[in-house]
Each structure stands twice: as structure tokens, then as C-alpha cells.
Length: 222
Image (cartoon, rainbow, N blue to C red; front, top):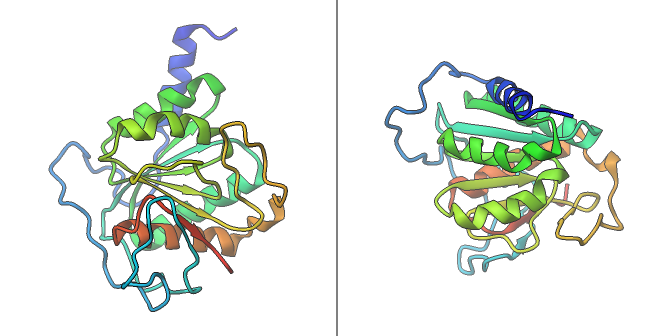
């Protein structure tokens, strides 16, 4: 059995794993609110009819490609699970962060008891955005996110059943895990988590967040 000390030490070691450009920056220093570099392309949303809370939008493929985060964008990648879909999502987020000069830090959950503490630790780091990968995180996120409305979250490859305005998800046919006892989608397909789709998911999701299109599900038709 893990002692409390060993569990805390394991969580601390996981939290200490940081990757990405500029990871030596002190996040406690003042930091301007992030703004998008570039603009959304036609077909991402209908400007005359913004999506309602908890709505699902299906943007035109590639309509997010013109949007980039500002250099030094502070992102925590919160990940749980060693299954292939989660590994592919993590690889896509890390590749995106390197390409976009994002300051990325990773919190890897190694034990179910660490799920809620790891979310709390991610919040305490003060990121611009928390990106989550792994179905195990969905129910804990549903508990925590309504109490931290000032913090933006992006869920890739899954979604919350009832997201608040600070939680945006990117999903597609083959993903769609929602937690809260709803079980795995009947269309779930681990093979749908391709490198190309996972890369599109992080880029489309961040484009939505940076443009204030939050609290919705971005459905990928790619």
C-alpha cells in the first residue's frame, strides 16, 4: 500500500515533468492576457449566430489553421492513462507546443487517487490554459471546473456532459467519452485517434479558446 508520503512524492515527481519552449520561465511573474495571433477562417463559426452554451459546432476543416497562440503561451498538459489514444493526444500536444513556442508543462497522473490533486496542482501553477488528455480525467474535471470559472480548460478526445463556459472540448466520431456513468460511446474507436486528427484537435481547440468560443464542443469532421 502506498503511504501518504510516497503518494505525495510520486505526484510531485509527475508534476515536475515539464516540457516545451521556455520552461525555465517563472510563471509567478506578471503575464499579459493571451490574445490570438491571426484570425479564424470562414466556416469556423457563423459570426451572425454565435454558438449557445454547451452547443456543438462542426467547423470547416482547416478553418483554424490561421490562428496561433502568442509566444510564451502558458499551458499545462494534464494527462492520465497509458492507452494508445491518450499517448497519441499527448504526442500531438507536445508537437504543437514545440512548433508554436508554447511554454508547456506536463502533469502526469500515475494513480487514481492522484486525479483530483493533480487538477488542483495544475490550477496552482497559474497557466493560461489546461489541456487534458485521458478519459480518466473526465469525472474529476466535472467536479472541479465549475468552481474555477476563471481558468480555461481544453479537453481533447472526450467531453464533459454538462460543461461550464470555461470548458471547451474537441471530439469526433470514434471518441466522445462523456463520463458521469454514461459509459463509452458505442462508436468509440481507438484507431480514430490518428496523428493527423489529434493534431487537428489541439489546433482547433486552442483556436476556439483564444477567440472566446468556449463552453462548447468542437466536432471534427476530418
